[in-house]
Length: 271
Ligand code: G1P
Image 1 (cartoon, rainbow, N blue to C red):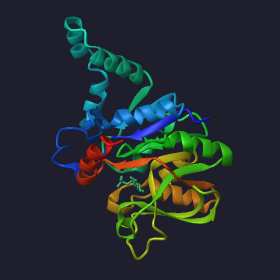
Image 2 (image 1 turned 90 degrees about the vertical axis):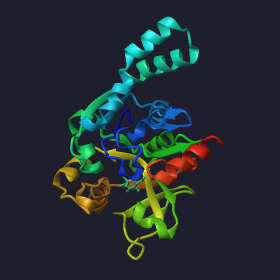
Image 3 (image 1 turned 180 degrees about the vertical axis):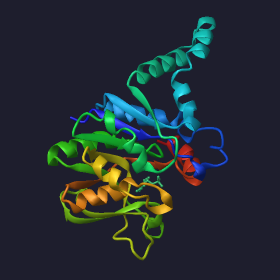
């Protein structure tokens, strides 16, 4: 059973400047709802019971968002507004399952995951990158099914334009297991077009084994001085840990870049 999820939220969000100079990107609205709420909904629907938020002092607004009781209580005491009331109830319910852990230096996704080390109880856990929103299919739920079927680690994937491979983790597969699932033989973080092993990209949903922590501990900073989760996954694959890529069927929205964020707001209103 996969019961815990880690969400790295300490990144600076520089690709979304100036919007993120003060405001955490995960609280930016997507169709009137902070992006992070879609990610929480996905986790809950997939059966997750505890979510570990990796934040930083700079991103304390995320914690405040869930503990902003006074403004709701004062407002709801004066006005009965069902929309606000229901949303407040949802926030109260969701915060019970969130644990806040701090990563005060933005040293990458791998370093963020490492901060949750002592809280992970089971052999596998889910990790979601909040820049990546997936609609119309609960990608985490689908991946948990695959994990159960193959007793393996799983990553979400999608084919991307060859010219954009340097934006993603790119993997190579050794076997096609089904119409949507591939057994991975290697993965590289943001390769250049010349060295990319394929045009199959890793998207921000991962089912990872607890054994990844020892790999993360041993890693030296990679590209841009960060510890990348992709590099630790690569080490595990080299030691024959089974990693499956799941080509999800949902609609992908990239909210981590300015053009992607603007496009996401337009696209979601059409869904
Ligand atoms: C991260 C991962 C990358 C993955 C991407 C998906 O990159 O490091 O491997 O393909 O998310 O969105 P980032 O978006 O943090 O640059």
